[in-house]
Image (cartoon, one colour):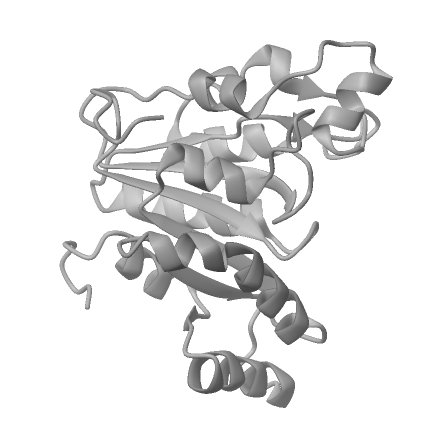
Length: 231
């Protein structure tokens, strides 16, 4: 996706995680809902998703994001990129006997409505989880989309420092070459009364020099800094 594409949003954000089940979709949907309530035009894209066909909730990531933006779920994630097997998307495609696909194909399938203020793309799995058969992952997708910001979602508890540091290390070549690429770490499920949570936040912010937020209101202010009340 070229930076000069006519349908490119004013701000393009990619949401990644330190792994699965850290709350990427929850954080993304909450931020989109908050932005939309403040009059910001938003849209979400999930380039590909795999999921357990027997999931009792019956609600995929695309469904959750679609509810947050008011879009159709098949606009958020194209029908042919839904893989009802709980494996990494290229593995799920192989198991289902469906065609392999490349990172270029995923990136080219992402389109946006005209005049969009903020477009959000949520990846699958962790930063190095395979997204495509040609070894595309979150890092290569961020590079292909020329994203303006990366939101890294991590759980606030045990294992946070390791997960965030490993993810930042994978992103570092991009951060070194893209001066305007902003990285925002979100500690999900943060409890200010939890000593470990506070220490994790302080370590990442003070020792590692990362931008760390612990609530959706602050995240929204970082994502759309021209909104009233933003820093």
